[in-house]
Length: 47
Image 1 (cartoon, one colour):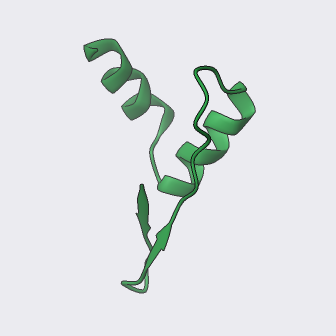
Image 2 (cartoon, rainbow, N blue to C red):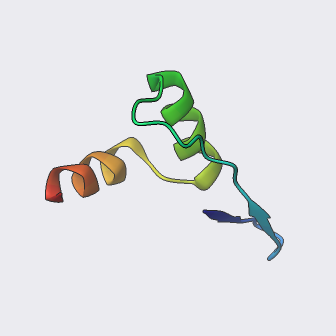
């Protein structure tokens, strides 16, 4: 996953390769990627 920064640059994000991750880790990943909770939940419910 890559985050697009406001200055036009990109930053690669490191994601854990585990079947389960802590909610705080997921929240941090979503925050860094700029994904809102509502967007995440909507996408999750589609799967």
